[in-house]
Length: 316
Image 1 (cartoon, helix red, strand yellow):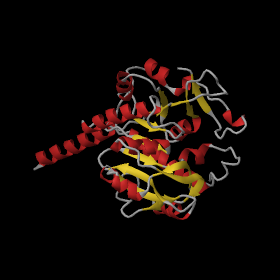
Image 2 (cartoon, helix red, strand yellow):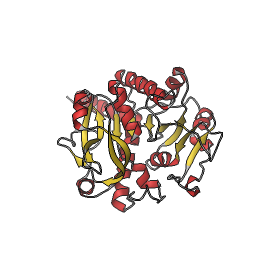
Image 3 (cartoon, one colour):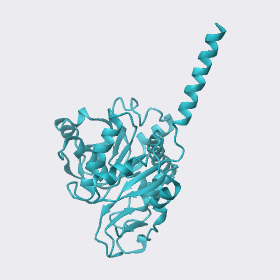
Image 4 (cartoon, rainbow, N blue to C red):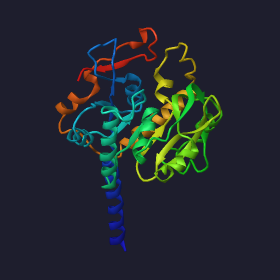
C-alpha cells in the first residue's frame, strides 16, 4: 500500500509539472494586416490599427503583423511560431486577394492544427466576425443593417455560461454586461438569427449573445465554435480601451470603468487561450525581427476626419 501511495503521488506531481510546462507565459499573437490606399503615408500597402495591438498587449501578449498576399508556406511557418491570430475589423471585402485570401488560408491551417490536437485560437472583431462566418460555410449570409456607432449592453442567450468564453465570468461583471451599454458597434452588415440557422452556421458556431441595431433588427453579436477555439464579436472592445476621437460618426464609444473592465475581459480571455500552445520562434533574433516593435505607429488622430488615434503603416 505505501508503494502504491508513492506511485500516485509521483503521478500527480508529474501531471502538475506537465500542466505548468504547457502554460505559455510569453504568448505572441499575429494580427492580420489590411489593404489600404493612404493619403497620410502614400507608399503604404497595408496597415493595422494600433488599438488592436494595444488590446492584446494589455492582456500580456506581444504582437507580430501577419502580411497579406503571401504564399501558403509563409502562413504555415508563421502560425507554427505564434500562439493565435486576430482578424481585425475594417472595410475590406471578404473576397479580396489580400485580407480575404489570407483569412481563408489561416482558417484552413488553424483548423488542421486543432484537428491534430495543436490548440490554436482565432479571434474575429467586426469584419473578422464576418470573415469567420463566411469561411465556416463558404458563403456570406449577412444582411444590411444600421449598427454604426451604436452602443449596447450584451444580451446573452440561454446556455451562454456553458461556453469557454463565459464559463468563468463573475456575477458582478456579468450584471454590468447585461444592464449597461458597455460595448459599441460599428458595422453595416448583420447576421440575423434566421440566417444563422438557414446557413448551417448553427452547426459550427454557438451563439452566445444577440443585440439590436438602430432599427431594432436582432442580430448575432458573439459566437464561439463548438469544436475549435475560434471566437467572434461584432462590437469593438479595443475602441473602448484605446480610441478617443470624437466627431459626427464617432460619438458613442463608452469609456467608463465598467466598459473598460468588460473590454479587458475579452482581451484577457483570448490571450489566455493563446497561452495553451507552446509555439515559438527558433531563436531570439528571429523573434525580435518579427515583432511589431520594429515599426512606429503614426498619430493619425490629428488628421481631420480620421477616427483612429494611431495606425501602423507598412510598405511591404
